Length: 470
Ligand code: SF4
Image (cartoon, rainbow, N blue to C red):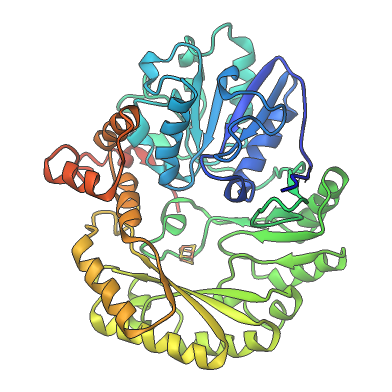
Protein backbone atom coordinates (compact mmCIF):
# COMPACT_ATOMS: atom_id res chain seq x y z
CA UNK A 1 0.00 0.00 0.00
CA UNK A 2 1.43 3.39 -0.96
CA UNK A 3 1.67 5.98 1.78
CA UNK A 4 1.72 9.40 0.15
CA UNK A 5 1.13 12.37 2.40
CA UNK A 6 1.27 16.08 1.61
CA UNK A 7 1.63 18.66 4.37
CA UNK A 8 3.95 16.50 6.48
CA UNK A 9 6.30 18.63 8.55
CA UNK A 10 9.83 17.26 8.93
CA UNK A 11 11.55 19.66 11.26
CA UNK A 12 14.73 19.26 13.27
CA UNK A 13 14.45 20.88 16.67
CA UNK A 14 15.99 20.67 20.09
CA UNK A 15 12.67 19.79 21.76
CA UNK A 16 10.98 16.87 20.04
CA UNK A 17 7.45 15.97 21.13
CA UNK A 18 5.41 12.93 20.16
CA UNK A 19 1.75 13.24 19.18
CA UNK A 20 -0.10 9.98 19.67
CA UNK A 21 -3.57 9.19 18.46
CA UNK A 22 -4.43 5.92 20.21
CA UNK A 23 -6.25 4.47 17.23
CA UNK A 24 -5.39 3.70 13.61
CA UNK A 25 -4.15 6.32 11.11
CA UNK A 26 -7.46 6.23 9.25
CA UNK A 27 -9.31 7.48 12.33
CA UNK A 28 -6.60 9.70 13.76
CA UNK A 29 -5.49 11.62 10.72
CA UNK A 30 -9.12 12.59 10.11
CA UNK A 31 -9.21 14.27 13.50
CA UNK A 32 -8.89 18.03 13.38
CA UNK A 33 -7.56 18.22 16.95
CA UNK A 34 -4.47 16.28 15.85
CA UNK A 35 -3.80 18.86 13.13
CA UNK A 36 -4.17 21.71 15.64
CA UNK A 37 -1.53 20.28 17.97
CA UNK A 38 0.73 19.31 15.05
CA UNK A 39 0.73 22.88 13.72
CA UNK A 40 0.97 24.70 17.04
CA UNK A 41 3.99 22.76 18.31
CA UNK A 42 5.79 22.83 14.96
CA UNK A 43 5.26 26.61 14.73
CA UNK A 44 7.23 27.11 17.95
CA UNK A 45 10.92 27.85 17.57
CA UNK A 46 13.09 24.94 18.76
CA UNK A 47 10.11 22.56 18.92
CA UNK A 48 8.92 19.80 16.63
CA UNK A 49 6.28 17.10 16.93
CA UNK A 50 5.93 13.72 15.23
CA UNK A 51 2.85 11.55 14.85
CA UNK A 52 2.16 8.00 16.03
CA UNK A 53 -0.91 5.83 15.44
CA UNK A 54 -1.76 2.25 16.38
CA UNK A 55 -0.66 1.17 12.91
CA UNK A 56 2.42 3.43 13.01
CA UNK A 57 4.44 2.36 16.03
CA UNK A 58 7.35 4.47 14.81
CA UNK A 59 6.83 8.10 13.98
CA UNK A 60 5.62 8.99 10.50
CA UNK A 61 8.07 11.88 10.24
CA UNK A 62 11.42 10.27 11.14
CA UNK A 63 10.54 6.62 11.94
CA UNK A 64 11.86 7.17 15.44
CA UNK A 65 10.71 5.21 18.47
CA UNK A 66 8.29 6.66 21.01
CA UNK A 67 10.66 6.28 23.94
CA UNK A 68 13.09 8.73 22.30
CA UNK A 69 10.68 11.65 22.77
CA UNK A 70 10.57 13.57 26.04
CA UNK A 71 6.94 14.73 25.96
CA UNK A 72 4.20 12.37 24.78
CA UNK A 73 0.94 14.12 23.85
CA UNK A 74 -2.06 11.80 23.62
CA UNK A 75 -5.31 12.85 21.94
CA UNK A 76 -8.29 11.24 23.72
CA UNK A 77 -11.51 11.21 21.76
CA UNK A 78 -13.06 7.80 22.49
CA UNK A 79 -13.09 5.67 25.61
CA UNK A 80 -11.09 2.83 24.02
CA UNK A 81 -8.29 5.36 23.51
CA UNK A 82 -7.68 5.22 27.25
CA UNK A 83 -7.00 1.48 27.18
CA UNK A 84 -4.85 1.92 24.08
CA UNK A 85 -2.86 4.72 25.74
CA UNK A 86 -1.95 2.35 28.59
CA UNK A 87 -0.99 -0.41 26.16
CA UNK A 88 1.16 1.97 24.10
CA UNK A 89 3.12 3.01 27.18
CA UNK A 90 3.60 -0.59 28.23
CA UNK A 91 4.62 -1.79 24.75
CA UNK A 92 7.23 0.96 24.62
CA UNK A 93 8.61 0.11 28.05
CA UNK A 94 7.53 3.46 29.42
CA UNK A 95 6.23 3.13 33.00
CA UNK A 96 2.47 3.62 33.12
CA UNK A 97 2.28 5.10 36.60
CA UNK A 98 3.38 8.71 36.86
CA UNK A 99 5.27 8.14 40.11
CA UNK A 100 7.37 5.41 38.46
CA UNK A 101 8.16 7.40 35.34
CA UNK A 102 11.43 9.31 35.46
CA UNK A 103 11.97 10.63 31.95
CA UNK A 104 8.78 11.03 30.01
CA UNK A 105 6.10 13.65 30.40
CA UNK A 106 2.72 12.14 29.55
CA UNK A 107 0.16 14.73 28.49
CA UNK A 108 -3.45 14.19 27.48
CA UNK A 109 -5.96 16.36 25.65
CA UNK A 110 -9.21 16.02 23.75
CA UNK A 111 -12.93 15.87 24.58
CA UNK A 112 -12.53 12.89 26.93
CA UNK A 113 -10.81 15.22 29.37
CA UNK A 114 -14.21 16.33 30.63
CA UNK A 115 -13.46 13.40 32.94
CA UNK A 116 -9.68 13.11 33.18
CA UNK A 117 -9.81 11.38 36.57
CA UNK A 118 -9.85 7.82 35.24
CA UNK A 119 -6.20 8.30 34.27
CA UNK A 120 -5.15 10.57 37.11
CA UNK A 121 -2.38 8.19 38.27
CA UNK A 122 -0.97 8.11 34.76
CA UNK A 123 -0.62 11.51 33.10
CA UNK A 124 1.51 14.40 34.28
CA UNK A 125 -0.68 17.06 32.71
CA UNK A 126 -4.17 17.10 31.17
CA UNK A 127 -5.26 19.90 28.87
CA UNK A 128 -8.91 20.57 29.63
CA UNK A 129 -10.86 22.28 26.85
CA UNK A 130 -9.56 24.25 23.89
CA UNK A 131 -5.78 23.98 23.83
CA UNK A 132 -4.72 26.36 21.06
CA UNK A 133 -3.54 29.00 23.53
CA UNK A 134 -2.76 26.86 26.58
CA UNK A 135 -0.40 24.78 24.43
CA UNK A 136 1.48 27.91 23.36
CA UNK A 137 1.73 28.99 27.01
CA UNK A 138 2.92 25.49 27.91
CA UNK A 139 5.70 25.67 25.29
CA UNK A 140 6.77 29.11 26.48
CA UNK A 141 7.18 27.82 30.02
CA UNK A 142 8.76 24.54 28.88
CA UNK A 143 11.63 26.40 27.19
CA UNK A 144 12.53 28.16 30.43
CA UNK A 145 12.85 24.97 32.50
CA UNK A 146 15.86 22.69 33.00
CA UNK A 147 13.75 19.67 33.86
CA UNK A 148 10.04 20.16 33.06
CA UNK A 149 9.08 16.82 34.64
CA UNK A 150 10.54 17.79 38.02
CA UNK A 151 9.39 21.39 37.74
CA UNK A 152 5.83 20.46 36.90
CA UNK A 153 4.38 23.08 39.26
CA UNK A 154 5.59 25.77 36.84
CA UNK A 155 2.78 24.82 34.47
CA UNK A 156 0.08 25.10 37.12
CA UNK A 157 -0.61 28.75 36.38
CA UNK A 158 -1.86 27.96 32.87
CA UNK A 159 -5.64 28.20 32.69
CA UNK A 160 -7.30 24.96 31.54
CA UNK A 161 -4.57 22.64 32.73
CA UNK A 162 -5.02 19.91 35.31
CA UNK A 163 -1.95 18.61 37.12
CA UNK A 164 -2.96 15.83 39.52
CA UNK A 165 0.04 16.42 41.80
CA UNK A 166 -0.87 20.08 42.23
CA UNK A 167 -4.61 20.55 41.71
CA UNK A 168 -5.75 17.97 44.21
CA UNK A 169 -9.16 19.29 45.15
CA UNK A 170 -9.21 22.35 42.90
CA UNK A 171 -11.94 23.02 40.40
CA UNK A 172 -10.63 23.24 36.84
CA UNK A 173 -12.38 25.49 34.36
CA UNK A 174 -12.58 23.98 30.90
CA UNK A 175 -10.76 26.45 28.67
CA UNK A 176 -12.71 28.10 25.86
CA UNK A 177 -11.17 30.04 22.98
CA UNK A 178 -12.55 32.20 20.21
CA UNK A 179 -12.01 30.62 16.82
CA UNK A 180 -9.09 32.77 15.73
CA UNK A 181 -6.52 30.06 14.96
CA UNK A 182 -6.72 27.29 12.35
CA UNK A 183 -4.08 24.74 11.33
CA UNK A 184 -2.78 25.31 7.79
CA UNK A 185 -0.34 22.43 7.36
CA UNK A 186 -2.70 19.49 7.40
CA UNK A 187 -0.97 16.22 6.54
CA UNK A 188 -3.29 14.78 3.88
CA UNK A 189 -3.25 11.31 2.44
CA UNK A 190 -2.98 10.99 -1.35
CA UNK A 191 -1.86 7.39 -1.54
CA UNK A 192 -4.12 4.41 -1.26
CA UNK A 193 -3.52 4.28 2.46
CA UNK A 194 -7.03 4.43 3.74
CA UNK A 195 -8.20 7.60 5.46
CA UNK A 196 -11.74 8.78 6.19
CA UNK A 197 -11.12 11.97 4.20
CA UNK A 198 -8.61 11.25 1.42
CA UNK A 199 -7.24 14.31 -0.40
CA UNK A 200 -9.37 16.43 1.89
CA UNK A 201 -8.60 19.56 3.90
CA UNK A 202 -10.54 19.68 7.18
CA UNK A 203 -12.04 23.13 7.67
CA UNK A 204 -13.43 23.90 11.10
CA UNK A 205 -16.48 26.06 10.49
CA UNK A 206 -17.93 26.01 14.01
CA UNK A 207 -17.34 24.54 17.46
CA UNK A 208 -19.92 23.53 20.09
CA UNK A 209 -23.64 23.20 19.47
CA UNK A 210 -26.65 25.41 20.13
CA UNK A 211 -28.90 22.40 20.85
CA UNK A 212 -28.95 20.60 24.18
CA UNK A 213 -29.88 17.01 23.40
CA UNK A 214 -29.82 15.45 26.83
CA UNK A 215 -27.62 12.50 25.94
CA UNK A 216 -24.97 14.50 24.12
CA UNK A 217 -21.59 15.57 25.42
CA UNK A 218 -21.08 18.23 22.73
CA UNK A 219 -24.35 20.01 23.53
CA UNK A 220 -23.88 19.85 27.29
CA UNK A 221 -20.17 20.23 27.92
CA UNK A 222 -18.18 21.26 24.86
CA UNK A 223 -19.72 24.68 24.38
CA UNK A 224 -20.37 27.49 23.92
CA UNK A 225 -21.16 27.62 20.23
CA UNK A 226 -18.69 29.61 18.09
CA UNK A 227 -18.47 30.04 14.33
CA UNK A 228 -16.18 31.58 11.71
CA UNK A 229 -17.16 34.10 9.05
CA UNK A 230 -17.12 33.23 5.34
CA UNK A 231 -14.19 35.62 4.81
CA UNK A 232 -12.15 33.86 7.48
CA UNK A 233 -12.95 30.44 6.02
CA UNK A 234 -11.89 31.49 2.53
CA UNK A 235 -8.68 32.98 3.89
CA UNK A 236 -7.88 29.70 5.70
CA UNK A 237 -8.49 27.65 2.55
CA UNK A 238 -6.26 29.93 0.45
CA UNK A 239 -3.48 29.84 3.03
CA UNK A 240 -3.87 26.07 3.44
CA UNK A 241 -3.52 25.65 -0.33
CA UNK A 242 -0.08 27.25 -0.20
CA UNK A 243 1.09 24.61 2.26
CA UNK A 244 -0.84 21.41 1.63
CA UNK A 245 -2.18 19.75 -1.49
CA UNK A 246 -5.90 18.86 -1.44
CA UNK A 247 -8.83 18.70 -3.80
CA UNK A 248 -11.75 18.38 -1.40
CA UNK A 249 -12.83 20.25 1.69
CA UNK A 250 -14.75 18.75 4.60
CA UNK A 251 -16.68 21.33 6.60
CA UNK A 252 -16.29 20.39 10.25
CA UNK A 253 -18.66 21.38 13.05
CA UNK A 254 -21.55 19.80 14.93
CA UNK A 255 -23.78 22.79 14.30
CA UNK A 256 -23.37 24.76 11.08
CA UNK A 257 -23.96 28.54 10.84
CA UNK A 258 -27.19 29.71 9.23
CA UNK A 259 -25.07 30.93 6.28
CA UNK A 260 -24.02 27.38 5.45
CA UNK A 261 -25.37 27.55 1.87
CA UNK A 262 -23.32 30.73 1.24
CA UNK A 263 -20.26 29.01 2.71
CA UNK A 264 -20.73 26.00 0.42
CA UNK A 265 -21.15 28.32 -2.56
CA UNK A 266 -18.14 30.48 -1.85
CA UNK A 267 -15.80 27.56 -1.19
CA UNK A 268 -17.22 25.66 -4.16
CA UNK A 269 -16.32 28.67 -6.32
CA UNK A 270 -12.68 28.14 -5.35
CA UNK A 271 -12.93 24.85 -7.23
CA UNK A 272 -13.20 22.35 -4.40
CA UNK A 273 -15.58 19.50 -3.87
CA UNK A 274 -17.30 20.02 -0.53
CA UNK A 275 -18.45 17.46 1.99
CA UNK A 276 -20.40 17.96 5.17
CA UNK A 277 -19.80 14.93 7.40
CA UNK A 278 -22.36 16.00 9.98
CA UNK A 279 -25.52 17.60 8.72
CA UNK A 280 -28.44 18.68 10.84
CA UNK A 281 -31.91 18.43 9.43
CA UNK A 282 -32.18 22.21 9.28
CA UNK A 283 -29.14 22.31 6.96
CA UNK A 284 -30.71 20.07 4.35
CA UNK A 285 -32.20 22.31 1.69
CA UNK A 286 -31.88 23.38 -1.92
CA UNK A 287 -28.98 25.64 -1.02
CA UNK A 288 -26.87 22.77 0.35
CA UNK A 289 -27.68 19.25 -0.90
CA UNK A 290 -27.37 19.87 -4.69
CA UNK A 291 -23.89 21.36 -4.16
CA UNK A 292 -22.45 18.63 -1.98
CA UNK A 293 -22.32 15.78 -4.47
CA UNK A 294 -22.32 13.28 -1.61
CA UNK A 295 -23.59 9.83 -2.54
CA UNK A 296 -24.76 9.24 1.01
CA UNK A 297 -26.29 11.70 3.43
CA UNK A 298 -26.24 10.84 7.12
CA UNK A 299 -29.22 11.64 9.32
CA UNK A 300 -29.65 11.04 13.04
CA UNK A 301 -33.32 10.62 13.99
CA UNK A 302 -31.99 8.97 17.21
CA UNK A 303 -35.33 7.52 18.35
CA UNK A 304 -39.10 7.64 17.98
CA UNK A 305 -40.66 11.04 17.43
CA UNK A 306 -41.96 11.40 21.00
CA UNK A 307 -38.74 10.26 22.67
CA UNK A 308 -36.77 12.46 20.27
CA UNK A 309 -38.70 15.46 21.56
CA UNK A 310 -38.24 14.30 25.17
CA UNK A 311 -34.46 14.26 24.81
CA UNK A 312 -34.43 17.72 23.27
CA UNK A 313 -34.21 17.05 19.54
CA UNK A 314 -37.14 18.91 18.11
CA UNK A 315 -37.77 17.40 14.67
CA UNK A 316 -40.88 15.46 13.67
CA UNK A 317 -40.84 12.27 11.59
CA UNK A 318 -42.62 14.21 8.88
CA UNK A 319 -39.77 16.70 8.66
CA UNK A 320 -37.30 13.84 8.23
CA UNK A 321 -39.33 12.34 5.40
CA UNK A 322 -39.62 15.70 3.65
CA UNK A 323 -35.83 15.97 3.73
CA UNK A 324 -35.37 12.39 2.50
CA UNK A 325 -37.59 13.29 -0.43
CA UNK A 326 -35.23 16.12 -1.26
CA UNK A 327 -32.09 14.04 -0.69
CA UNK A 328 -33.23 11.30 -3.09
CA UNK A 329 -33.10 13.77 -5.97
CA UNK A 330 -29.39 14.44 -5.47
CA UNK A 331 -27.89 11.51 -3.54
CA UNK A 332 -28.07 7.76 -3.76
CA UNK A 333 -28.65 6.75 -0.16
CA UNK A 334 -29.16 7.81 3.43
CA UNK A 335 -27.51 6.49 6.55
CA UNK A 336 -29.75 6.62 9.62
CA UNK A 337 -28.38 6.63 13.14
CA UNK A 338 -30.47 5.52 16.10
CA UNK A 339 -29.78 5.13 19.79
CA UNK A 340 -31.57 2.43 21.73
CA UNK A 341 -31.88 2.14 25.50
CA UNK A 342 -32.41 5.86 26.12
CA UNK A 343 -34.05 6.76 29.46
CA UNK A 344 -37.83 6.43 29.11
CA UNK A 345 -37.68 4.17 26.06
CA UNK A 346 -40.48 1.63 25.67
CA UNK A 347 -41.07 -1.12 23.14
CA UNK A 348 -43.50 1.15 21.30
CA UNK A 349 -40.61 3.54 20.62
CA UNK A 350 -38.62 0.73 19.01
CA UNK A 351 -41.69 -0.23 16.94
CA UNK A 352 -41.95 3.34 15.69
CA UNK A 353 -38.25 3.40 14.80
CA UNK A 354 -38.63 0.16 12.88
CA UNK A 355 -41.58 1.62 10.96
CA UNK A 356 -39.51 4.73 10.29
CA UNK A 357 -36.75 2.63 8.70
CA UNK A 358 -39.25 0.64 6.63
CA UNK A 359 -40.79 3.83 5.32
CA UNK A 360 -37.38 5.32 4.49
CA UNK A 361 -36.40 2.13 2.63
CA UNK A 362 -39.39 2.61 0.35
CA UNK A 363 -38.10 6.08 -0.53
CA UNK A 364 -34.33 5.62 -0.91
CA UNK A 365 -31.54 3.10 -0.29
CA UNK A 366 -31.20 3.18 3.50
CA UNK A 367 -28.51 1.90 5.84
CA UNK A 368 -29.44 1.96 9.50
CA UNK A 369 -27.28 1.75 12.60
CA UNK A 370 -28.31 1.28 16.20
CA UNK A 371 -26.00 2.28 19.03
CA UNK A 372 -26.73 1.36 22.64
CA UNK A 373 -27.07 4.47 24.77
CA UNK A 374 -23.84 5.17 26.69
CA UNK A 375 -24.28 7.82 29.43
CA UNK A 376 -21.73 10.64 29.38
CA UNK A 377 -20.50 12.78 32.29
CA UNK A 378 -21.81 16.38 32.54
CA UNK A 379 -25.05 15.43 30.77
CA UNK A 380 -28.51 15.18 32.40
CA UNK A 381 -28.25 11.39 31.88
CA UNK A 382 -24.89 10.92 33.60
CA UNK A 383 -26.43 8.80 36.42
CA UNK A 384 -28.34 6.48 34.14
CA UNK A 385 -27.36 2.82 34.53
CA UNK A 386 -26.32 0.83 31.47
CA UNK A 387 -28.52 -2.23 31.99
CA UNK A 388 -26.80 -4.88 29.90
CA UNK A 389 -29.52 -7.57 30.05
CA UNK A 390 -32.32 -5.11 29.25
CA UNK A 391 -30.34 -3.77 26.31
CA UNK A 392 -29.67 -7.30 25.11
CA UNK A 393 -33.41 -7.99 25.08
CA UNK A 394 -34.03 -4.80 23.13
CA UNK A 395 -31.29 -5.71 20.69
CA UNK A 396 -32.96 -9.06 20.09
CA UNK A 397 -36.28 -7.32 19.62
CA UNK A 398 -34.83 -5.02 16.98
CA UNK A 399 -33.06 -7.77 15.03
CA UNK A 400 -36.09 -10.03 15.06
CA UNK A 401 -38.32 -7.27 13.72
CA UNK A 402 -36.11 -5.76 11.05
CA UNK A 403 -33.35 -7.25 8.92
CA UNK A 404 -30.14 -5.67 7.63
CA UNK A 405 -29.54 -3.15 10.37
CA UNK A 406 -26.18 -2.67 12.07
CA UNK A 407 -26.13 -2.86 15.85
CA UNK A 408 -23.03 -1.77 17.71
CA UNK A 409 -21.47 -4.43 19.90
CA UNK A 410 -23.14 -4.29 23.30
CA UNK A 411 -20.14 -5.56 25.23
CA UNK A 412 -17.94 -2.90 23.68
CA UNK A 413 -20.51 -0.23 24.57
CA UNK A 414 -20.54 -1.48 28.17
CA UNK A 415 -16.77 -0.98 28.40
CA UNK A 416 -17.21 2.54 26.99
CA UNK A 417 -19.81 3.19 29.70
CA UNK A 418 -17.50 2.03 32.50
CA UNK A 419 -14.72 4.33 31.29
CA UNK A 420 -17.01 7.25 30.42
CA UNK A 421 -18.53 7.66 33.88
CA UNK A 422 -15.82 5.92 35.86
CA UNK A 423 -13.39 7.28 38.40
CA UNK A 424 -9.82 6.53 39.41
CA UNK A 425 -10.86 3.03 40.65
CA UNK A 426 -11.66 2.19 37.02
CA UNK A 427 -8.27 3.63 36.06
CA UNK A 428 -6.51 1.37 38.59
CA UNK A 429 -8.41 -1.63 37.25
CA UNK A 430 -7.40 -0.78 33.67
CA UNK A 431 -3.76 -0.25 34.62
CA UNK A 432 -3.62 -3.56 36.44
CA UNK A 433 -5.23 -5.33 33.49
CA UNK A 434 -2.76 -3.87 31.00
CA UNK A 435 0.25 -4.47 33.29
CA UNK A 436 -0.75 -8.13 33.71
CA UNK A 437 -1.64 -8.61 30.05
CA UNK A 438 -5.12 -9.73 31.09
CA UNK A 439 -8.00 -9.38 28.72
CA UNK A 440 -10.11 -6.34 29.51
CA UNK A 441 -13.41 -7.80 28.44
CA UNK A 442 -17.04 -7.29 29.27
CA UNK A 443 -16.97 -10.17 31.76
CA UNK A 444 -13.86 -8.90 33.56
CA UNK A 445 -15.48 -5.46 33.96
CA UNK A 446 -18.81 -6.86 35.16
CA UNK A 447 -17.04 -9.16 37.63
CA UNK A 448 -15.13 -6.15 38.98
CA UNK A 449 -18.42 -4.26 39.42
CA UNK A 450 -20.15 -7.23 41.08
CA UNK A 451 -17.15 -7.76 43.38
CA UNK A 452 -17.16 -4.11 44.44
CA UNK A 453 -13.72 -3.49 42.93
CA UNK A 454 -15.05 -0.65 40.80
CA UNK A 455 -18.18 1.49 41.06
CA UNK A 456 -19.95 2.74 37.96
CA UNK A 457 -21.09 5.47 37.67
CA UNK A 458 -18.35 6.72 39.95
CA UNK A 459 -19.76 7.56 43.42
CA UNK A 460 -17.34 10.42 43.85
CA UNK A 461 -18.16 11.90 40.46
CA UNK A 462 -14.84 13.66 40.38
CA UNK A 463 -15.68 15.01 36.92
CA UNK A 464 -17.80 17.61 38.72
CA UNK A 465 -14.50 19.35 39.49
CA UNK A 466 -14.28 20.17 35.80
CA UNK A 467 -16.34 23.29 35.16
CA UNK A 468 -17.85 23.07 31.72
CA UNK A 469 -19.85 25.67 29.86
CA UNK A 470 -22.63 25.40 27.33
S1 SF4 B 1 -27.75 18.51 17.78
FE1 SF4 B 1 -26.20 16.91 17.72
S2 SF4 B 1 -24.31 17.84 18.53
FE2 SF4 B 1 -26.03 19.19 19.07
S3 SF4 B 1 -26.61 18.56 21.14
FE3 SF4 B 1 -27.91 17.41 19.71
S4 SF4 B 1 -26.83 15.50 19.32
FE4 SF4 B 1 -25.37 16.91 20.25
